[in-house]
Amino acid sequence: MANASDRSSITDEQHQLVKFRKSDISVKNVLVETELLKKARQRTFSHWNGQNIPSAAQMIYAGFFYCNVADRVICLYCNLICQNWISQVDDPKEVHRNLSPQCVYVQLMCQIHEKTPISIINQNSDTQSQVLGGLQFNNIAHTSVVHSAYAEIPKRVASFALWPTDSLPPVDDLVRAGFFYTGTQTVVTCFYCNGSLQNWGAKDNPLIEHSRWFPHCSYAKQLCGDELYRKIQQSKKIIQEQAKIKQLKEQNSGQPTKDRLLLAPDENTLPRLVAARLDLPISQRLIQQGYKISIVKRAWEDQLRLKQDDFASEIDLYVACLILQRQIDCINGNKENIVVPHVRMKSIREKEQSRSSSILPAVEEISSKSATGTTDVEVTASFKDDSSSSNLCSLCWTEDKGLALLPCGHVATCVPCGYSLKICPICRQGIEAFVRVYM
Image (cartoon, rainbow, N blue to C red; front, side, top):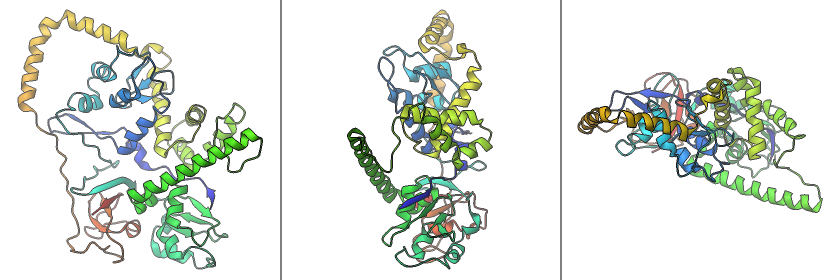
């Protein structure tokens, strides 16, 4: 299987990664952190040096992102930037709580962690995505497809009119996997992510190959389901590790190697690698959205130089650019805007000690009121399902229902059929996004 293009489209969900919503229920600010962002935040600490400084786990728990500069971290929810940590002295959670008490992450994770369950949901830009009660669900996929003309299954089928059938996967399998025929040799392209593949074999599974080569395609990921998708990515990782070991052996023996993976780039090869990645649709889209090319370039340079690998997902590149931009905006050429935790905390403690006698009664009164008035934060699900007793897709009647339509929340179709719709077949409301559900 040869990869005709490594390009995939960045999703609009990235714009929602640092959003939070207001709530009237017991907590004023309720954080909405997508699972994608949570994992991307954890991955920023993949090369964190935890010697003589707080651990990566402590930083992650406290809500920080690593900046790839010394031990500098930033909170993207409140723009607090800290550096020069001291182990056994600085507690990241306490530092965050004391220096930025109004931060929505602090208010949820640090102040009421023991009292209120965290509600992690995916959020649409215009409407609050609904939580589907009683169902497990995957990440949201927005309706902004690359090739909208081929979103409908019949049109993808029609594109294969001149498809050579000898020793190639069945057209139905290719169509279900999201591909349409380009008319060139055996090149097919995904209507959703724009990923293209060619050189097919008769035994190739289009869906597996789609997910293997374009792991960030939301359509392919939702069509696979969590378990199959996980197995595909694990298999890919094993193959890559084996290829890397083989390459190292061949390098040591002086023999040439094929399918070279990214190893520690030197200053001569790094510009070439970065330039190639700046041409990717994901990079171009970020530039079109207002990020300077220098920011996107620096994000790729840091990733390839420090971590010697591509970003794990599109979200990771977006986060890297956001971290760089926030540092520029917040530091603004003045290093005093970078907080040294133990220095600032010492100043706070001294001020607190000087006025402790007058503050203590007020704190006790607030604590008393809080203890008597605390209620659990609840997220109510407004899930509306098709009243049909059958779990079969309402359109094709062959596959099981597995896709919720947002914002209405109706589950009426399988994944392939759902992506061909623009309005909900039950309530006729416009569809803004899809979420995979397991009934």
